Image (cartoon, rainbow, N blue to C red; front, side, top):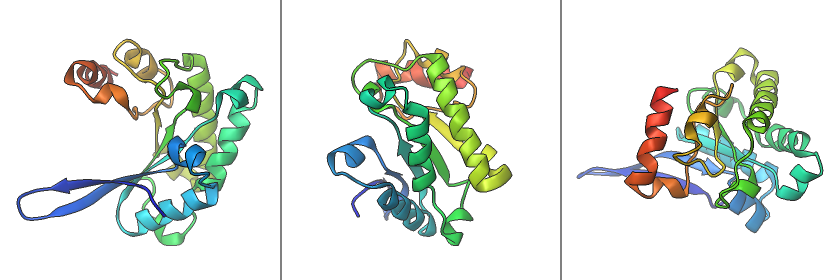
Length: 183
């Protein structure tokens, strides 16, 4: 099971704090299944790592009008169920909705599309975890940049962003941080 793990280091030691599972590059490029994503999330939570679980649809799925149902099914099948992992939710767990067609393309889902998806995901999280589902952060991760961040953060149930390319330079990332602070 390969996944991304983010390490923290000081002069004396290194340790992992966070991992991302289910990123589109793994799901699409490596044909990673929802069950594999779920098992990785459960293992990471049981080990004490914070987990960002990524889900998202292709352009073909979106254009066919099947985005919400597809992403809900992806979430349902990828959510951790193991007792020790579920106990870590919501404090160590977040969802990142990443429409695959918007990653690195400069395309962004409309505010209405983001709101519809995040609301549907919130409903599924509450169904799976009860009131704790309301506390799980849902991040948006599709070409977030300085010009669209404030609008995205204003959408209901958008609790933050998973920022890719725009995080690589201070000039591009700082306005996103400022928009998040203002939200």
